[in-house]
Image (cartoon, rainbow, N blue to C red):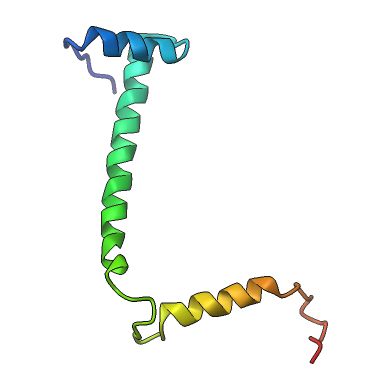
Length: 91
């Protein structure tokens, strides 16, 4: 569904946006701008949801252990060469 928008915008900003690329039309440019604004807002919402984790130390234990140990173990695992499941690891 399309909706008609009639408004006045900053002329210099409009000229700058029009000069960024060869837009098919101002409507296509406005669609792209509104889409980018909505995505940026959503990304900020998601980032805000993770801020709580920044306040919790990595070594704080919970029911699954602590994130610091997990990160350490997964980092060490990624440094080991990949072995097929049927190949015994060297001791």
